[in-house]
Image (cartoon, rainbow, N blue to C red):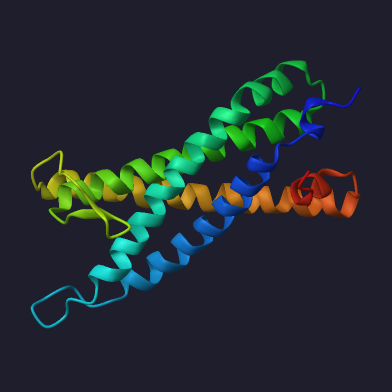
Length: 181
């Protein structure tokens, strides 16, 4: 009988790579958009990169919740039944990734909510502001967003290092994340 994680559903594999591409884009776009001059009457072009960043972040949040819902039970089962420290570390890595991705998305949204700028989902639907503009809370959630994203980057480097380790060890873990059944 195959271990449960041998049968990774196609949707989980697709979501994994969608999340990876989205997170990469969000890190790159954040450095770019924050280097742009502050908005003014003459400089309104800053809105596009911020809206794109927020849209991808919201979409990423939905994908993370979907993936976590599909995987959380099997991850917890793997953690409780596994005797190997590497397997327990892998489970912790995934649970922390889901947690940090969620914190990054929620804190980014909350910061945006308190900034006074509207959020439009894919330029189709305006999300009504749940809050009034508040600079102190905007700064608080911006700081949470910043530090949770740095923690996420560190954990992603560990995750990529583990993938390289599995690739060198040729233990089949990498093939599972490229196999679409």
